[in-house]
Length: 85
Length: 408
Image (cartoon, rainbow over all chains, first blue to last red):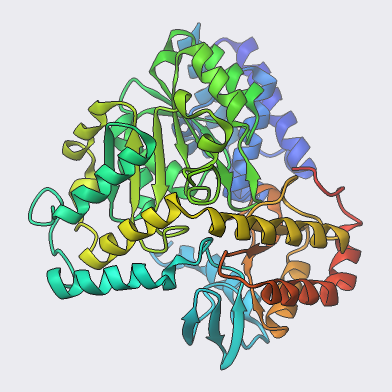
C-alpha cells in the first residue's frame, strides 16, 4: 500500500470517528472499533457513510463486515481504492 | 466467550425496559384480540393503535368467509413447498391477480414478507452485480443483499444525490446495479423521493426494486402503492410487497414487468426451501386484494385519520418523524426514557402503540409509533388525541430542547 494513501485513509477514518465519538479518535489502530468506541451497528454504518464522503469512495457492506479495527478498515479501503484505480 | 454470553447485553436491555412495569413494552403480550382495533392487554381492554392493519381487513366478513371455506375444502396447510406438493390453484390464481393488478407478466408469492425480500434479492442479484440499498431499509432487504453474493453498497437514507454519486463511481457497473428502496419507511413514516430516484435510475441504466410493504393498499388510485400514486411505475422493474399489512394475512409477493422473473422459482432458495402459504391465508389474501383494488372508501377514511392525527400531534408540540402525514405517525425522542414514559402513559389511557428504540431505529432516536387503520372510528381518534394531549406537557418539554421538528 502506498504510504501517503494509507495515511490519508487513516486520517479520514479518525476524523469521521471524532465527529461521531470525540473521545474515540485516538483509539489504538488494532483494537475492536465498535466495542472500544461503544458504537452500535447503526452507528458503525453512520461512521462508514462519513468516511465514504470524506474519501469519495463507496465501501461495500462486505468490506465493513470484515474490518474490526481502524487498521483493518484502512487496509480494506486501500484495497478498494487500488482495485478502482 | 461461551456461545451464549453474547445475549447478556440484550438481556440487560430487556430487564431495564421491563423494570417496575406490569406490561413489557417490547413483545407486549396480548391476552386476547377482539377486532382490528381492540385487544385485551394485562386484563384491560385497549384500543389498538400499533398494528399494521391499515385497512382493517383482518376481520373483513368476506375475507374471513373465504378463509373458512378454504379450510373446509383444502385443509389447514399444504405441508409442501411450491416446488413439490404445495402448488395449489389458489397460489397460482393469486399470483396472476397480483401481476394483473400492475399490468405486468410476472408475479410470485412467498410465504412471508421477510422471505419475499430475501427471495427476490438473493435471486435477482449475484456475483459481479451491485446492489445499492437505502441505509435505512428493513432488515429483510439487508439480509436479502447478504444472501445474494452481490457487492452491496448503502447510500444515505432518502438522498438521491448520494445515490447518484455512488452510481457514477460504479461507471459501467451501474448497468449491473439493482437499486433497492422502500416507498414508505415505517420507522419514521417518511416517503422515498421516488420521482428523483426513478430519474437517476433511468439516467444510469440501472435497475430499480421498490418495497411497497407499508404503502400497498394505502397509496394510489387503486391502492397499488406510492409508485402508482407518483406515476413512476413505468420506471420500476420489480415491486415487492407483503400480505401482512393492508392485506391482513401473512406472506409476500414480487411482481415485475420482466417475464424472466418467473424463473426465480427455480433459483430462489427462500421460495424453494419452505412450505407454501396455507389455503385459508391464500384465500383471505386474494379476497383482500379485491377489496384493496376497490377500497377507495377505506383509503379515504384512513387518510382522514392520518391527516387529523398528524395535525393534532404537531399542534400539541410533538416532534414528528415525517414531514407529511402517513398512516404511521412517529413521535420522536432523543431520550429513551421519555419515549418509554409516553408509551406507558398512552397504554394507561387505553391506547396501545409501538415503542421503538436503538439500534432498531435510525440516528439513535427513540420513537413512539402510532399506526392507524380504516377500521378506527372518529371516536377512536378522539381517544388517541386526548391521550396524547394528556401526556403532551411532559413529553413535549423534553423534545423541544432537542432538534427542531420536521428535520426528517
